[in-house]
Image (tube, rainbow, N blue to C red):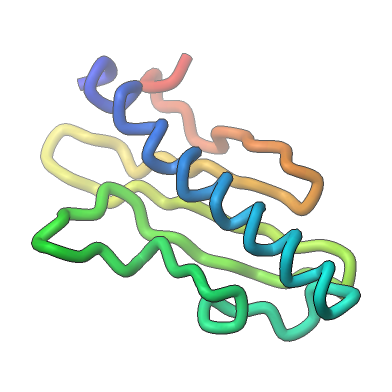
Length: 103
């Protein structure tokens, strides 16, 4: 339902904020984002542990030495839309697919 989906969005934002912190550290050490991967930044939000069910899957794309995009794609489940939350290199977080859930 939209109320549940609205409550789940903070998971994506929490992980995207952590990715942002790790990407800032990576760029500070390396001078740019080139070569940044989950392993290289020492953080992977896709690694649920202890039987945790992930609500989103995450993708990291380095667009250029000075920009990246991290996307949280909601796992489709019964009666839920596959919503998408995106973080860019300047820290802007946007909901790409609304479907009524995050309005």
